[in-house]
Picture 1 (cartoon, rainbow, N blue to C red):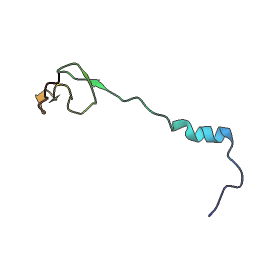
Picture 2 (cartoon, rainbow, N blue to C red):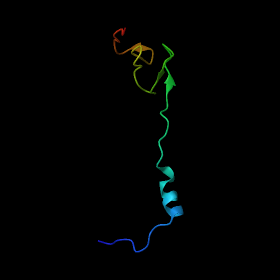
Picture 3 (cartoon, one colour):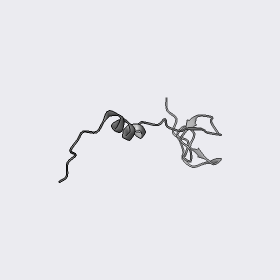
Picture 4 (cartoon, helix red, strand yellow):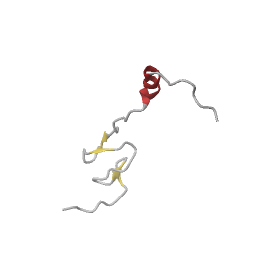
Amino acid sequence: MPNPKRRHSQARTSKRRAHDFLTAVVTSECPNCHERKMPHRVCPKCGFYKGREIVEVKETK
């Protein structure tokens, strides 16, 4: 198996790792209850999606 003859420089390693970072989760506002939710998903708080109730949400105490 071929192995590298020389070590990679710090600059080269850093350039390769430039895109290895975590991105923040994108959220949108639910038009029904105004809670933050993932886009294109049913709201976990009220169970509505596109103005219709899709899931019945149980009350939590």
